[in-house]
Length: 301
Ligand SMILES: NC(=O)c1ccc[n+]([C@@H]2O[C@H](COP(=O)([O-])OP(=O)(O)OC[C@H]3O[C@@H](n4cnc5c(N)ncnc54)[C@H](OP(=O)(O)O)[C@@H]3O)[C@@H](O)[C@H]2O)c1
Image (cartoon, rainbow, N blue to C red; front, side, top):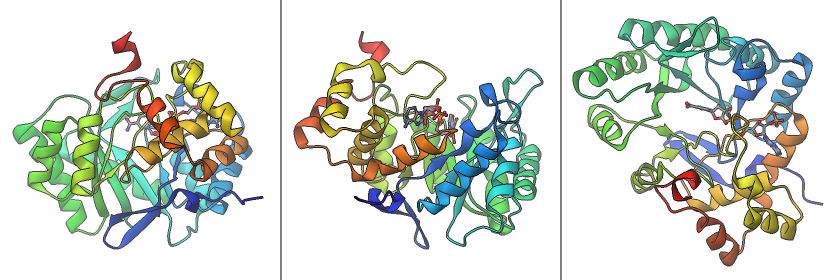
């Protein structure tokens, strides 16, 4: 029997000095319902994090938004002192209101404060990768000013790499003309290919593309789960549909790093085994053909 290991999905050089396994872990689901408040089972959340590291996961995606604060605190509690190879990616640019709403918080001083908050909660001296999470279509001086705050902190050694999240192709190109961008994190999965242009552009540039909601998320019932093709391919391989969805992403482009989210050790184990799935050319083509690149499943119905 093959042992489950994140290494089975291959590796990607996030920067010339930092290589990660392409199978990572998205920690958002460790917060309470609606990504708000503490987890329903705190010890299970800690077990998920510890097991992730045991399985070779060396790229954990988080944010102070999750909980808020809860997930970063859990990560520090479960994993500190950290393995020296562990890359923790976080996001700034928003905050949660008392009802759990997600609101922009983007003044350069507020962005700097969020970096310091993440450092403190994660008990890190520097943050490996910080995504500026876009909440709107801002470009020009506004974008330059916000990014400038992160560049300053990178020069001060508090951030190692800068990423962009929920970013348009235009915003990405402007940001890239200002400073080096290590990763883009946008929505992309088997049923939502709206970010295809950016995915292909980042591939061309050798920049990591980290799809959020790689499984279509638990927020909405995943249309892919109900799809007969996905179900059939999963049955042919005798594995879960989640694992097939991740295997398809890993095959879609060599610069994709997957960060499936889960609150259970069982699903973590399942997702981490995605690198062991070998889709045939025909299966991959059929899954790719479910939705046109640049479109979503809803849009083609
Ligand atoms: N940049 C952004 O704006 C942004 C937005 C959203 C998310 N993110 C990041 O992306 C990561 C992934 O997103 P996500 O967690 O929301 O969505 P996801 O990975 O697409 O899906 C997570 C959902 O799938 C379920 N699931 C996971 N593994 C499964 C399996 N093997 N079998 C059956 N169900 C399974 C989970 O439930 P269980 O808990 O029951 O496993 C959860 O409901 C997040 O953790 C976060 O780090 C970023």
